Image (tube, rainbow, N blue to C red; front, side, top):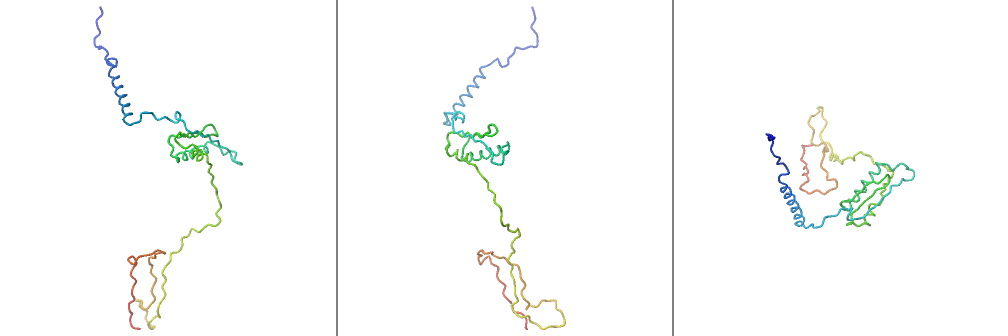
Length: 202
């Protein structure tokens, strides 16, 4: 008789208890079905392929004098524009894709107004350029400034010595002031006007 080999144990892997895996799968299924009834969505939401909807096929055509205008870059630009138009309708799950070299297929779900969608998607946009006849200068307009004029005759007699002090009788020098530029300003925001002071004897 042959002796049993030492060191080998009987296999107790995944075949030992298949009931655990089955119970876990059943618990997950019951949880999913219970969640479906609890949320109130008892029927599955169908995709555009099963629910139906509107399918629009657009064909690109060359303009007169531009025979090579249809290329992959221009077709991708057109697809991006059409996607923005469809999204502007508030449509979810719409499909916009290129078919061949000159066709664009637009699939819109049934819940949307098909006539409105056809009108908005199929409208061709045109951009017009016009020449500018007169160009305005880029220089800023000069700011208004206060200008002062002498109000009286200069006083004093000429003497042989130059004086370093200006006399009070000279004309006022212009000072920058805040302007309202045509806006109304309240009295509280206006600065007090300077009052004249009497000068020395003539």
